[in-house]
Image (cartoon, rainbow, N blue to C red; front, side, top):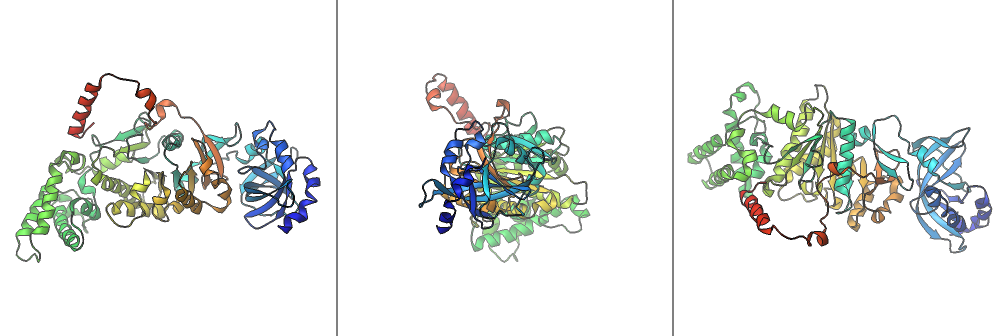
Length: 548
C-alpha cells in the first residue's frame, strides 16, 4: 500500500506528540484508514483508564481534532504494515463530532454525523473515560438507563424511549446469552418511567409472568377469555377450514356466506349500515352450524354436501374440545369487546402498564391465530381511535421468527401479514413493535430493516450475523464485527434509540423481576432424589387435564 509507506517516516514524530497514537492517511466517506504506532498501543495498554488502555484496538474509539471540533471514530479492523512492522493500518468508521470546551478542552455537545472530514496527516488520539462520559451523557429527552458503556467502569448507557418505540426495535441473541432477562430489564425500566403506559407482550414459553407479577397483568388459558367472534374472516379460515388447494377456496366461500348470515342475526347488526364478514359482531357458533346445515340441504348450492360437512364437523369438534374453551366457550357470546380491550390494552393502566399474554398452554395449532387476533386488535384499535386522545401501544413479540416467518406458504399467514403491516405502517398510528428473536435470518425479509433500533447480543450463527449486519446502519459496522465475541449480558445497540452505536454491559436485574428462563443445573439437580411418585402423579394429572 504506497500511501501507507509515504506516511511511515512522518508517523513516529507525530506519535511522539502528547496523546497522539498515529495519524489519518486515507479518507473515504464513512470509512477511512489510519496509521497507528504499535509501540504506543502497547504502552497505553498498561494505563489505569480502561478506555485509554483499549486505545487502538478493534472496537475502541479514537478522536481527532478538525478546527474547533473533535471527530469520534471507531476502529473496525487492523493489519500490520508490511513495509514497517512498527506500524498498524486500521480501518475506522466515523460516529459523530463534538465541540471543544474552551477552558477544559473536553468534548461537549456531541452529535451523530460528521460535517467536516479530517485531512490526511491529522493526528489521532485515544478516548478517555471522561471523553466517553461526555459523548454518552444522556440529553433531556426521556430515557432509561440499562447498563454501562464498554469499556468504561461508570458511564451509563441510555436508551431514548420515544425514539426507540417510535420506529420499532429488535432484541436479538442466541440462546443462553441473557436475552429474556435483557428484555425484562428494558421493559421494567420503561414501565418504571411510564407507569400509565400500554404494553402487550406475547409470551410463548410462560417466562415473563413471574417477572411482571407486581407491575403487570398476566393472562393465560385460565383467564384470557378471548371471544372467538373477534376473529376476522382470514382467521376464521385458519381455524375452521382444513382442506387445501381448490377445495379450500370452495370451503372459504361457503364459510364467508354462512359467517355473514350468522353475524346478521345479532341485534347489533341492525344498527350497522355496512356489516361485513370481518366486522367484530358477536354470533353464536350454534347459529353458524345451523346455517351450514340449512345451506347444505338446498338444491341450488352448486356443490356437494362434503364442504359443508367438513366445516360443520370442524366447528363441532372445536366447540366440544376443552382445550379451546378459553376462546370458543359458549360463555363468550356476549358483547364484551370493550371490557376485553380495556383489560388487555391496560386502559386505564392503574400502575400496571404491561399485559403478559402467556400462550404456552394453548394448543399449538391455534396459537398463531390467537397472536394474530391480539396483534390485529392492537392495530385496528389504533386506526379507529385516531380522532380520540391518543394512547400509543407497544406490542412486544417474543420468539418473533415463529410469527413472522420468511416462508409465505403454510399455516400462520394471518399473523405474518398483520405483524408485517404493523412493522411498515404502525408508527403512523401510534403502534410500536418490539421483536425478540434468536433467529433473525428466519424473519420475513425487510421486517428487521423496519426496526429503527437494534439491540444485538451474541449471535453464533454466521447467517444470523449477516442479516443483522445488512440491517444495521453503515457507521456501526465496526461494532458488528464484535457480535460473535460478546460476553453474556452484553449487547451492541445502534439506531434511533441511542445517541451513537454503543457496546453495553447490561445491568443485573433483581431476582423478583427476572423471567423464569434460567438454565437448570444438571449436576446439582441430579444429586437430589425423593418424591418422584408424587411428582409423576401431579404431572400426569395436569397432562391429562391439559391444564396447569
